Image (cartoon, rainbow, N blue to C red; front, top):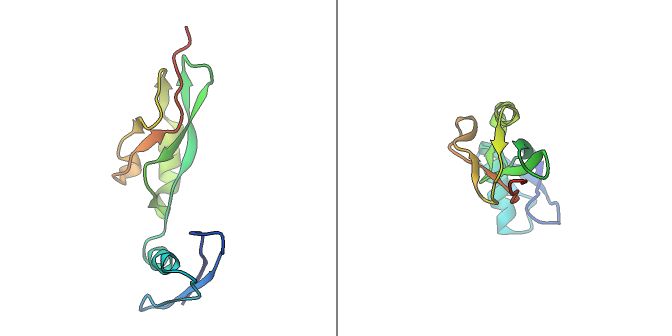
Length: 116
């Protein structure tokens, strides 16, 4: 049996998931789905910053377009660390495709224009 704190809503229900993926402790159906997913394939949305040249700031905030497997986070961070962009960059623009072999893109979460 695995135990988790549900992070889907502010309630923070204590979930218990058994070997047959029966979920208890949830107050809503979304908690049940989260418990099953967390027990089988835990995933997280990864947020970070990437270096950028020629912009007002020297880093731009980024995030994964959707959650990636928890086991790939360290590899993804190493890859993110090696990225260096050139301005301009626009919100939602893919910064890195297929991050760490997950099939999920890393996207910018802010516009940064080129400094003149």
